[in-house]
Structures are given as structure tokens and as C-alpha cells.
Length: 309
Image 1 (tube, rainbow, N blue to C red):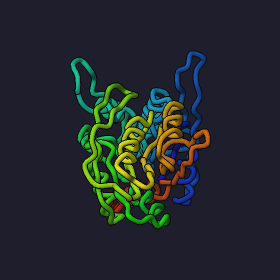
Image 2: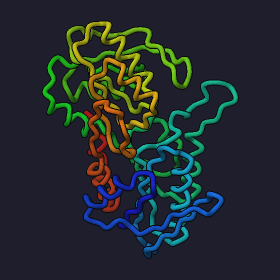
Image 3: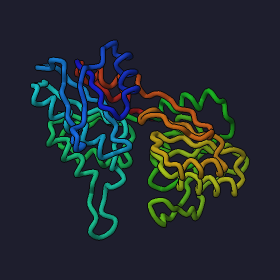
Image 4: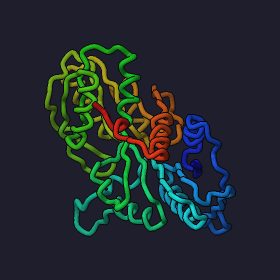
């Protein structure tokens, strides 16, 4: 087994390698004067089981191109098997044609990964689970829920209601509510644009309860903050948000600071950033990913890691 990392989230790759008691593979990644990416794998990987850790987070085009070139380099170096470990799968929101003349970029990225030479994919909390079907190679889809729920249970919150900020996240929210043995509510929303969201109605009772907003990712925090406003209006005592991935923008941070959300819980699937004083608790998914890598390498079952209820 050999573990390699791109530049997207090297600290996470180092934690994964430490969990596996493996050194991180030696790879040189540089840029030509015109900005082209150049990759050279220093270690001999002929016949090796190679895992390349690279979330396609900001800047997505750079990190994705780095990953594709690393996969191609590993394939041409005669690696026995190449697994792309993508904790955060970028372009996942473009998973369908919801208006005329638009691409399905999540499928395009899947095609690129397979064409580059990836033999399998290990990822976590895809924006839409159906994206697994875009691949003609095996996909191991993990969930951050067990890691996040373990932290939430330590807070000993009473009268918890898990709230889905949109109908699309109902399945994830239902899993959280089962694990926490909590109530369930759903916010209906209307998206005005990529950055503007309007919360319309709340299905469920949150009065005098501690609300937990659950989503797979937040960028501009529009969905979370509008949902929090509606939940507070319906009488919630406190509001905590839990998201698997937080590629947040400055506008999103400002929204969170002005919202009724008291804390955001997320993971290190993407590199940590400056939250400008907003209370954020970042949990590591290195052990979860490391255990999955170990089981894939040893041809063992990974299904127990998928369980979120």
C-alpha cells in the first residue's frame, strides 16, 4: 500500500497515513511558467496498491487537475490499483439538467477520473447519492454522521429535533434523528439564485426544543441561515448546525455571524480556514477514511463504515 497526497488537503492525508502507520509517499508537484501542472512520483510504485488523497475543493479546477495528473502518473508508473480518495467531491451540485442547455458536470468529472486511470473511488457524503451511478468503477461512499453524532452526544442536549434545511436532505436528517433518538422536521425552501434562498414553511414541531440543522455542505450559508430564521420563529430554544463539508465563503461567514446559529460542527474533509470569530468545531475524518483504505487494501468489507443508523 502507498498513500499519496496532492496540495488540496495535505494535513488530512498526513493524519490518514499516521493512522495507517505508513509514510506519506514522495511526490513532486510543481507548475510550469505558464501555470501547467507537473507531477513526478518519486517512489517506486510498480505493482503497488496506490491511494491518492485529494478533495476537489477550492480552487476546484486546480485541485481536480492535480488529481487527474497524479492518477495518470501512477497508471504510467505501473501501479497495480489506483484508488482516488476524494473526501469532498467538487462539482457534485451540478448533478442534473434542471434548466435548458446546462451540463451535468458531476458526470463529466466521473468520466475524467475513470479516463485518467482510477480503478475505484473512496468519497464521503456526496451531494446526491445517485452520483455513485455516474461511475463504472466501484465507489465506496462513507458518511460523516457517526463522527459528528459522537461529538453531539457528548454535549448532552435534551429535547433535540433534527431539522433538514431542504427536502433533498431528508434521508440524511432521518439517519441523524435515529442515531440521536430525536424528533424530525423539514424546511421547505425556494432557491432564488446560487447565493440566495428563501425558506417558506416548516413541517414539524420545534417549539421549546434544541434544533440541529443537518446538511451535507454549505458554501454561502444561505440555506442554513434562512432555515435557522424560520426554526427560531417557530420557538426553538437553540440552534446548532452540522455539515459534512464547509467550503465557506466570506459572505457565508458574515451570514452565520448574524444568524441564530450558535455553533457550526463540520469535518476536516477540506482544509481549515479563518472563521472570523464564528464558533466552529472541526472534527477529523482521518480515522474513518484510514480504516476504509485499510479494508479496501485487505479486500475486507467496508459496509459497516457506511452505516449511519
